[in-house]
Length: 170
Length: 170
Image (cartoon, rainbow over all chains, first blue to last red; front, side, top):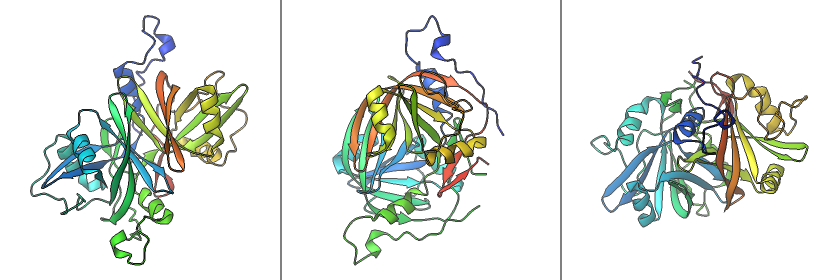
């Protein structure tokens, strides 16, 4: 048990506020949402652009759709849109080094991506997707993809992200 | 370490396939994505409609937006759309009973929801949202909300969902 510092105020407690949740309050609230960790990758000719993401969700079973939220100015967004494709690689607990590397846009060498769709070797599973739609969402975009291929990898526990730290399952 | 049965085939291994990932393959792939667990609730006059969800994601910091994926025929979707509001209650590890109850649409009695916006007492945090947009997404809808108020609750570890089971942090 790791207690979380309860430093978030309800807006009603903030008489001097401007009627909105501040970026700091928002980030603190989102820290309570646990998730897996994935490397989102898209290929631009011989270059793979990739970032670490946690803002992913299953969307639809039939057709098989997923979504991922990508910052409006993330380089990977343009590559995904140009290519019309992306691959979402779900990381294993042992792979927090890859998570940190791609979060800082310093991918490990040599490349761990397959030729063609950028399947990351060593991930739990890779979802190879055709980009079907994007929707504006404030400072991010909602990118929807149809899963065209599922590549199963390592049998292991997942890497988790909670309260701004990498964690593992109990 | 709980190894996962690697029963997913890449589509390329399926020469008799129809070119799409089947619902069974999709569900097996999504089982690799770990997440928190939340009770999504909306109020219709004196009635609260609520379901257990895992398909939630932070979306935008400024403005403060979140999204949740809701089945096209879920009762809560209509209530959310009518009310123009919803509350996303992130569950604590101790609260898997509530998760099971709301997953079966048999909420515990007496009601654990506050008056007004349906904040679930005992949750880690509740995000009180104004519904700003919905987008079609296959058999689900993407529901976007602006976080208007954050209500911090229990200090505890989160409830997790992975490989079709409730789990906790390590």
